[in-house]
Image (cartoon, rainbow, N blue to C red; front, side, top):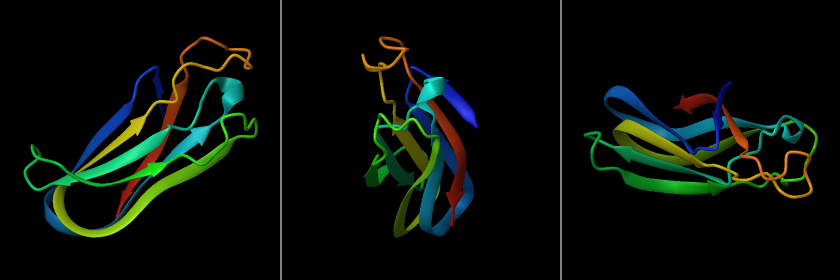
Length: 117
């Protein structure tokens, strides 16, 4: 896991050459007892040159913000495309809600593996 506090997550994967891609996924953890929430959404983009990126889609979070049980969820998009670069951006949950013991503090995003098939 990689943890990010009070910031969005962004990663670019360089495949080394233009390749066919059918699926892109990334895992996230929610454990609100440890101030870790799912991102609000995850956006997937791709590029042939690393400069101009084309949006492939956005996946919205479906895990309830008040779920106290630890949850691991893969955000994925299945779309046939050719690209060399894959960019993934996860939007942070934001400030911890009033009902939580950590109210008013920034939340964390915990990201797992990126999968490109």
